[in-house]
Amino acid sequence: MTTSEYNFERCKLCGQHTAAATYDLISSMIYVCHNCDFHFLNYLDTTPENRNNSMPLNSQNQQYLQARADENAHLHQSRLQLVLNHMHLSGAKVLDIGAGLGQFQLLLNAQGASCHGIEPSTIRREYARKMSEITLHAELVDDNYWQTTYQQYFDAITLWDVIEHVNFPKETLEAACQLLKPGGRLFLDTPSRSCFTYRISQRCYRYLPGKTSLFLPGFYSTAPYGHKQIFTRAQLTKLMTHCGLEIISSARSYPNQRFSSNKIILAGSKI
Image (cartoon, rainbow, N blue to C red; front, side, top):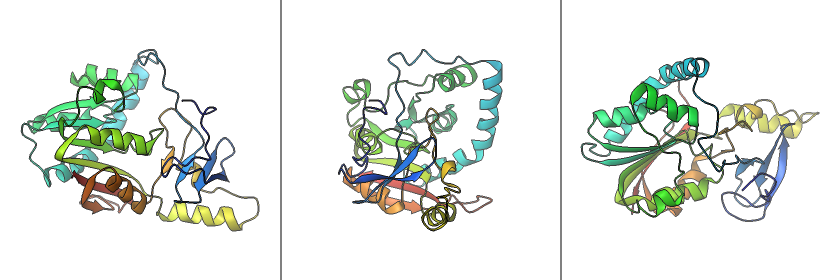
């Protein structure tokens, strides 16, 4: 589905036709649902029919990706510890959705897990193959590749900074849970809409002349795989419960972070 084909008055979270264009970001618009207060961008990524037909890995983007890998190394260690707090990884079957450069999969492999990874970006898949000898899948979690072969297959599924990027978060999480064994664990993190910069931006837009969007453009992007929605903790907790998950952990930041963050960090167990 393309941006022009989707009716953005239909909320991507609750499904009601109660969303309206509310915050003008000049190049895009944030829609707000009057039923569930979900905020989402009026933009969808177009999935190419041939996912391999995109920008190749070259020395310039390889250098950029390496810098990003170095930045995220400490965060992945914290994520691994969260998983280890709730399950043993030796022999576990794990699916990492939005695997990026394959860094987290390397940590899982070192713990003895059997891993699969999904990454829609061609250059990131190629980087993982070239630098770490990891093969990541282009097929998205709701594709037949996963849904026909891997029903109730995985002991754990992770979505690190992913749910804000996908076109349809409700359907993505539902599809992921179909692949999880009963009693399996799902772990995710994502930016929180409850942070100060988001809330003050809303107030400025409502009450100051000129409808200034302040920091809101920094939360959303029409770039490929950019942020398309920002959740509140209550919204995401309710969605996970809807998908048949019991919340077993909830946090705003990871231990030993240099600065406090206002993220949504959740773990759920499939009922």
